[in-house]
Structure formats: C-alpha cells, structure tokens
Image 1 (cartoon, helix red, strand yellow):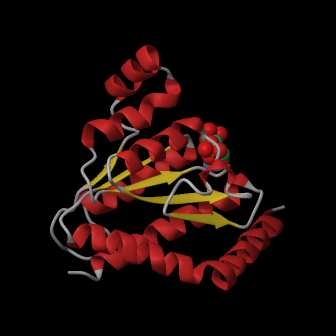
Image 2 (cartoon, rainbow, N blue to C red):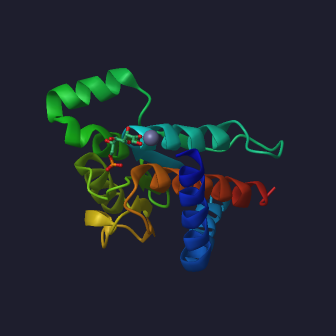
Length: 184
Ligand SMILES: O=C(CO)[C@@H](O)[C@H](O)[C@H](O)[C@H](O)COP(=O)(O)O
Ligand SMILES: [Zn+2]
C-alpha cells in the first residue's frame, strides 16, 4: 500500500511537470506582479484546501525561506466569528464571497482552491473577486469543474484523487512563495 501511494505521488508529479510547468510559471507571474504593485493576496478553500490557503497566507505574512518584509497574504478561512455569522445569516455559500467584498481592492489577487472545482463557496468568491476588480487564480483538479471559465487562470491537476490533487496544490503554493521570495 505505502509503495503504491508513493508511486502514485511520483506519477502525478511527473504529469504536473510534463503538462503544467507553463501555467505554474504564469501563476508565479500573477502573484509577483500583485505583490510588486502593493496589492494583497486573498485565499480560500474548504477542508484540506482551507489548510492550504492558511499555509500559503502564513508564508506571505510570516516568511517562506528568505528573511524579507512581511507581505499581505490573508486566508479567508480563519475568522470563526465572521465565518459563523455569514454562514448563519447569509448561508455557507457566501462565507468567502462576503469577505472578499469586505476586503478586496482592485488589483488584489484572489486564489481559490477546490479539488473538484465545484465548491459553491469558492465559486461565489471568484464571482465577487472579479466584480471587485481582482485578479483570480484557481487551483483545482479532476476536470476543473465550474471553476473553468470563471477565473483568469485555473490550474487543473490532472488527477481524480483528492489527496494527490491537494499534494500538488501545496507544491504549487510553495513554488508561488519561492517566486515571491525572489523579488527581494
Ligand atoms: O482534505 C480533505 C480530503 O483529503 C477534505 O477535508 C476535503 O478538503 C473536503 O472534503 C472539501 O470539502 C472538498 O472540497 P473541494 O476540494 O471539492 O472544494
Ligand atoms: Zn486531505
């Protein structure tokens, strides 16, 4: 079992190298231009993808590898008062979009993470981010789901296995952090 899982991981990395290098480079360009223009990065996702959103945000406001200035990365998954109030009053599907509407400025980047590409809370956040003039980057999997066509760039991990998709998402998240570090 263990060796099979490791081989499966190895295979998906190879597929990502073969098919997504150009798109990951584009994503690096999007996040670095956002930071260079003094804008911020908002991130959201559910479950494991919420953890990924927080992980990437923390590496911007804290640090990744390099000691450099604090950078504006905000995960929309962490304020339990806002999350519970919005879910209770407006419905769970609005938990991220409502926060995007509260915080987004034109030129900011919204990164939405969903392995299926179909979580309504993330889809609504993309819609609000676009309406508020943000750039939008999707990290998804399977066939990209409904995230196709509603974000500037939807990086679709070519797998149907949620765990593999998430593992590639955090790898890409770290590559984005590395690209940001290289600005300093
Ligand atoms: O981490 C995992 C499974 O590996 C779960 O917590 C998973 O993130 C949750 O089921 C999410 O609700 C799935 O949503 P999504 O990735 O399709 O948007
Ligand atoms: Zn998981």
